[in-house]
Length: 75
Image (cartoon, rainbow, N blue to C red; front, side):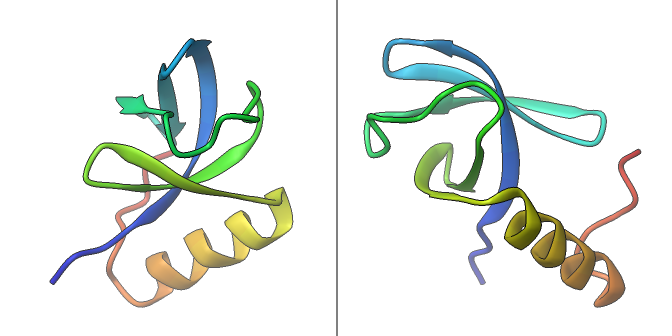
């Protein structure tokens, strides 16, 4: 099963960036979301940001994943 998770972009350098969820940071490819900016939430799948979503939707999705046991508490 594949799972894409929302993460917050904390660094941006061209088509590369760093996204964070809780205490976990990952280097990500930003080629599919050219208008992204630091502070935006993105859906990350296989190391690539595939779409941008608003903070409220990201927080709902993260909570749903946690409540379903699919995401550990990463605070």
